Length: 278
Picture 1 (cartoon, rainbow, N blue to C red):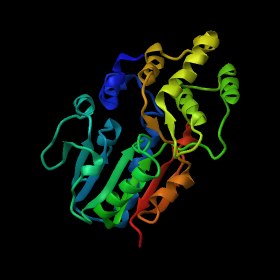
Picture 2: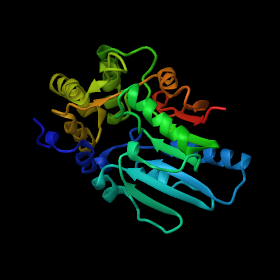
Picture 3: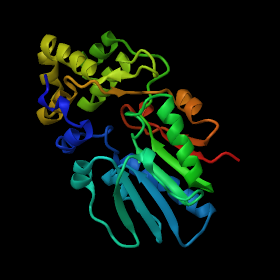
């Protein structure tokens, strides 16, 4: 049993976060997509001040080429994650708040942009998805934008044998892709999600039965060890399809775009754009 299983999951994750790689963290292509989405929005609505909310403290988003006059508020419920990733408050430009997203209290129609990276995966579907959509829809200005990179399972679920075949053929470029493919494969439906300990057990089976394949893959051991965090954890991850995400967010938010990155596994890491309903 993982000794960290009794501790807050996100606090424990902070201790291993630096070993995670894209696509669990944004790749350079994702950064470019985020920046282009913000620039396109800004070009249509020229203004001297931009009010932005970041769900989490993702460094790659904090360090985007934000438009001049942007004031960014980042919100995270894990103080260790804030301590690890937040580069510091700058009066008038950015500040961080230690809080649960569902407890946020912004004025209605006060935000230009809400943005986040992989922030839905730990939420219960559909209830918490719907709850977050209602909050964001209320906070956004009528012309505002929600921009999220989501981890979306494919419409047709994979099998363990298909994943193993790709592993044998060295077609899985990164360990974190394997980890996410195992998790999505194990999810029977998005309402149930997948228990983290079950993902660990699937990995443990691979490690026990095919150790040479993992050596052949050449992944950093420190990155592979991050999956040990899942051992004994009863928390669940949820991986909706893009259509299931739309079902949860509608009618609170209207989808205005889906961008699929070109990198390996990018089809499961789309960046979606929403606005309040007309």
